[in-house]
Image 1 (cartoon, helix red, strand yellow):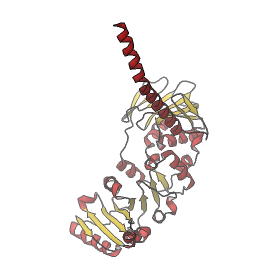
Image 2 (cartoon, helix red, strand yellow):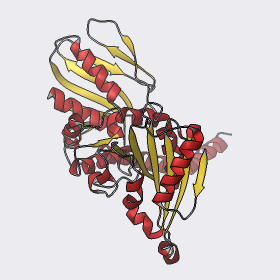
Image 3 (cartoon, helix red, strand yellow):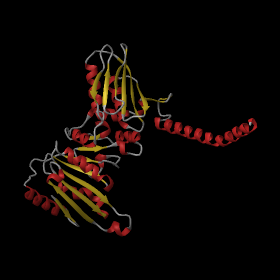
Image 4 (tube, helix red, strand yellow):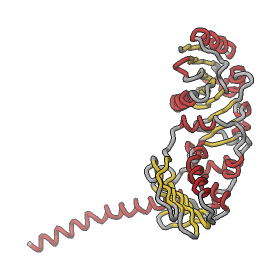
Length: 359
C-alpha cells in the first residue's frame, strides 16, 4: 500500500500510518527498531532497497530523510514537508516513510523525525553518503544508539578514516569495517588451528579502499607485528599473508568470490569470501547495537603505521601515500605515451626516406 501526503505534518503522517496498518491488517508490535536513512534523491532508491531487504531479518520502521533546501531564495523560504508512506509488500517486513523536507525545514529534520520514532525501540541512523564529520553530534545522529557511515563513498576514502577516528563516539561504525568481517573470521580460525608466532603480515588490495587499511590496522593491533599494505588491482581485498618461521599462512581471493586458505603442512582449502551487497552489511550491523570496541581500536590507529608498497615503490610514514604514488605512476605513463606520439611522425618520415633511397 502506498500513500502520498503533500504539505503535511508529523501528526498527519502518524495518523496515515495507523490507517494504512489497519487497512493492510498489519501491526507495529513486531517491529524491533527505527532505521533513519539520511540521503538524497540520487541515492535514495538503492538505500531504501537495501533497508527493505535487511528488514526481512530485522522488521523495522524505516524513515528516509531527503533534504531539499532549495537553490533560489524563494525556494529556501518555502517550508514544506511531503511524505510517501509504504506499508505491506512495498516496504519489506516493516513500514517505510519517505520524508522530503523543503526550504528551512531541511535544517530541522530532527524535529520532524522525533515524533515518528517507534516508542521504546532503539534508533539507528545510516548515512549512505555525505556523512557528517562527527555523526554523534549531528542532530539526527544524537537520536540514535547506533550510527552507520560508509567511508567508501567519500572523496578520499582512506582520509575519511582519520575523520572517523577524530570524531569517534561509542555507537559509531562504518561499513568499511563490516566488509572485512569474513576476513577477520577466517584469519582468526586459521590461527586457532596451530600455535605459531607471527613475525609480519601483508595485506593486498585495491587503492582507495578503506577496508584494506582497516584490516591491516586490525592485524597490527591484534598481532603486534609490522604490517605491509600492497596495492593491487582488486577487486577489494585480494590477499592476506601472515609470515611465520614455518612458512606463510595465505588467504587469497583474487576474484572477489571464492578464497583459498594455504597453511604450511596442510592442503589448500577453498573458503567462502564473496563480496557482500549493502543489504547484507546493514543486516549485520543491525544484529548488535552495542559499541564495537574492536572497531574503535582499529580506526583510532594511525594509517601511517602501515608500510605501503606499489609496483616496487615503498613508503612508510607521513611523507607520502599510496594514492600519490598511483598518481605519479599514471602521470609518468601519460608523459611516456605523449612523447611516443610526438616521436612517431618523425620516425615515419625517416623510414619512408630510407625506403625511397633503397628503391
